[in-house]
Image (cartoon, rainbow, N blue to C red; front, side, top):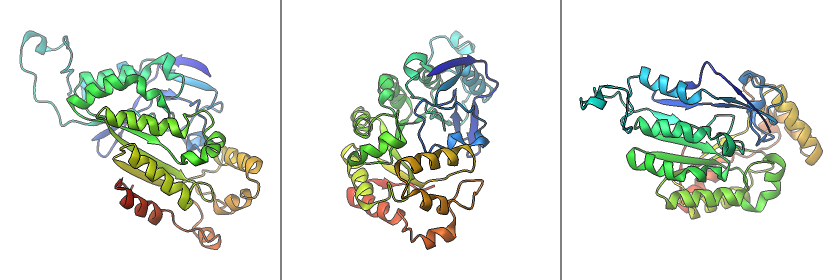
Length: 309
């Protein structure tokens, strides 16, 4: 993975009226998942998305500037650079926001994080400012920062979610569609370790892929493994294929590994929706059954909460 550092102008994306903010310190992702919509042109990523990582080296500074402008103070630092250092009570803080260091389409804990350490730098700032955190990854590398996650969780709240769409029995599918991410077994083990450390955990079960990961066996096995790992909730979702780079690459891989399914996917996404949504008419013609009732049934049976968008 080629790593390139640069000075960025922006870092934070607000959601829910500013109650949740998402940070994206990386552009590019070595995981290079076949279905990733981060390859789509609307994200304005470079074409060598899976082999070149652009690092916003000033991301920690941008995060601190953003929080201070919002009225937050580093309440968990010995030296704050404010009147608190003189023993003066700080002004009332704004309502706490949730900081999502998920990376969005670029996994914050992709392998380069071990060298760059950007996640930990930003997590330290989140802790300093006394704010809760949410993480989303598909890499066991998150465990290197479990000590800091525990501190944040004890101070406010920390949640770590894993993106998982295949069961342990379907590791061969992971090797095709998520070639550089942690194995399925490693991800469930990571969730168990985090749970045992007192950290809240969840699974983003998306994208659920027609004819590949939507079977009863795959879905039930994932929910069962989630329950065994102590996962609090599962958030499932379907697959989008946006016309352009994302769809072209996905179809290339399908023709190579599953040529019998490629025509079905071509038909299902023939509408070329700019949002990547499947064609509703084709769903009926292809007699695709909804996976949601299955996930709902298994979550209820294994005692795992089901979240929805």
